[in-house]
Image (cartoon, rainbow, N blue to C red; front, side, top):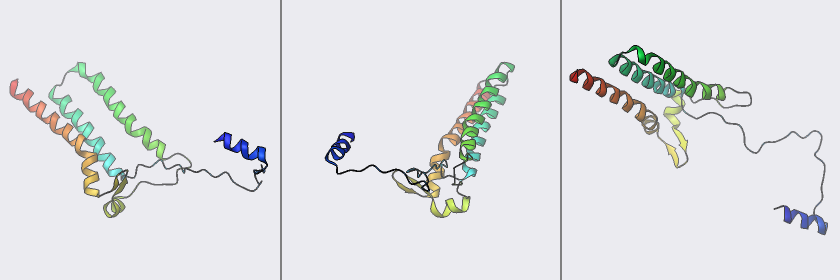
Length: 145
């Protein structure tokens, strides 16, 4: 690309001008730090993860598990807290979708628009399966013991 510019400059076809004083810097990409999903879906995901820890922690109650469980709770808080802070930084003009907006418009993905039901299933499938798995492990451990 720079080779082409140098040829234009050498032939005198290009001219270099100064930036006007009143012109503001225009960014080609706007800072959209929002993920497009309503906050309720993130809350449900957090509830499922913490529910799994509650189920497993109460099924295998042992004082040795206190520190690992506390570390996992802190990691979950960090995994969801840092992006929440990130979306509230200055320069971010977008806001998360409300549940009503999400129900009417769905969400745009790389492969096209996704219906709200399908997006909810995709977001919550792993956390819900994790809770079901925790319940299954707790029931098996109770039956075996």
